[in-house]
Image 1 (tube, rainbow, N blue to C red):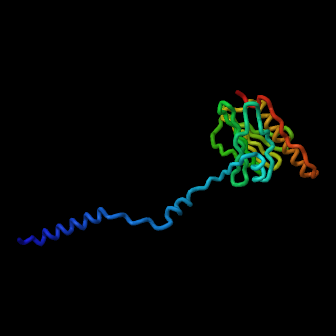
Image 2 (image 1 turned 45 degrees about the horizontal axis):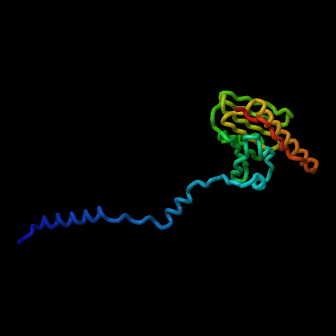
Image 3 (image 1 turned 180 degrees about the horizontal axis):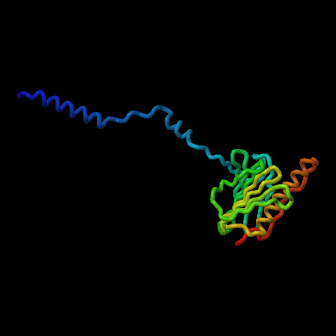
Length: 201
């Protein structure tokens, strides 16, 4: 029995095409997965178990009470890129307050890009710095610049007016102490005042 030459060619092409479709894809170059993983952005934050450890990492003190109020406690201490120290406070109702500090005045270190309808800028009471209050009627962002440092105080549920002013005065007082210590060479007591009812409910 003779097989048509054209039929033989058609069968051969079909077999070759099927092999190509079912072929196993080429393996990725060695080390490509590792290179892709290394290209991911590293987390700039490092957590610390205690405030003192975080202070040592940035090289400055964080003159805010460890316990802000009876219901707010310092929950997390962390440092960004060895420059910025953040303490996160939280109460039993999961209300949160974030306070940051970094060397260098006039720097917005909040990381908060929300637009606030109410913005007020004024000099600190001792005349040695400035403060900016931002609010939308609920949340509040405060930026403080004094004593060679920039501060950020953020409360999604807001601060009361007196509480905000008390915090700013506390920061200004700690900055004064730092300046006096640098000028006189004498160790001064850190400001560790606990304000009762410092946040509005």
